[in-house]
Structures are given as structure tokens and as C-alpha cells.
Image (cartoon, helix red, strand yellow):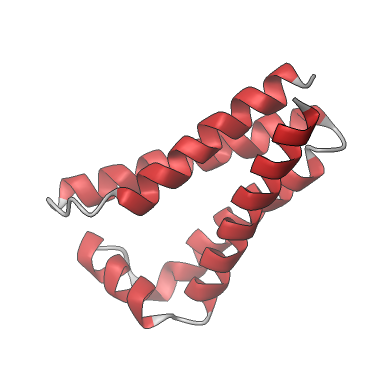
Length: 115
């Protein structure tokens, strides 16, 4: 399970870092998505901060499992919120948030059994 935990945690952390950097750089695609769901573009840094925190929790959790569990739980909460934000405005382009949510659930399970 250790190898799976490392692979999933690093992959998810990398995706979160790329997404967070895109928000800080005001990537047009991400800004359009934020506009669609009604999230103020001026506060995209808050989402980026949450993504960076989740990534760090996942990575540091490889060395101390409680941080991995906390990081994965935070990422799950983040992507449940993202999914609900899309559904609220009847935007059913849910492949990205649901895929990342699934990865976060897997990461939580792996960090939990690696304890």
C-alpha cells in the first residue's frame, strides 16, 4: 500500500498545485469557470490557498500519516464544494471536480490504512 499511497498522493498534489498556480495566474479557462459558478475572480487566491494546503498535507502525510488524512479530508471537502457549486448553477461539466474528488477519497483511504 505504501507505493500506492505515494503515487496517488504525489499525483493529486501535483494536480492541485497546477490548479492553484492557474488560479493565481488568472488562467482564462479557470476564470471562466469561476464566473460560471458565481465565485468572485478577485478571491481566486483563496481557492489556490486551499489547493496548496491540501497538496502540502498530502505530501507531508507521506511522512506523518495524520497530515495525509487531514489533507485528503480537506481536499474531499473542497471538491464536494466545487461539485455543489457547479450543480447549483446547473453546470453539469463535472468530470474534473468528480475525478479529483475520487482521487482524494482514494488518497484518504490509503493514508488511513497506512497508519
